[in-house]
Image (tube, rainbow, N blue to C red; front, top):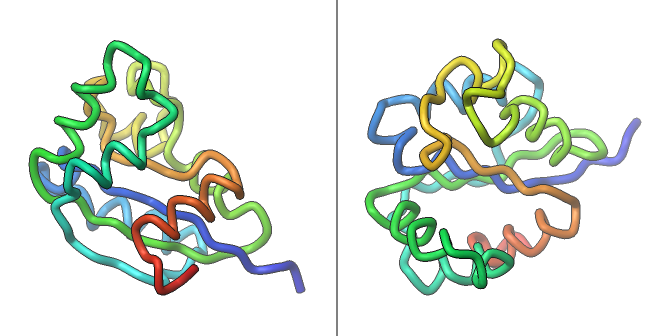
Length: 139
């Protein structure tokens, strides 16, 4: 049996505002991933800054923090086989919805680069850090 691991997924404010969070969760579940923790929350500015710390020096950092904090997000931890984070990233598709292939979340549902519906950890190390940030009891 393969090792089980976890990753963080955020249905960003645009997904919640557009009523697409359920579709995102359904796609994760249809893929065979299991929900471990789910919370609808308005991400505060401090948490957002810590979450996006690697972008702090980039010119879009302020807009990124403003976007993720503008309204509630659905924050979840999903569990699956080894490299669950990679499975989620493949389901999401490329960051730019215009470049995301049909069949991916962003390819089917996304319309704007800066509001691309969903975040998924980009490595096992990022998944661990992000789960600790959003769900410290699971760490």
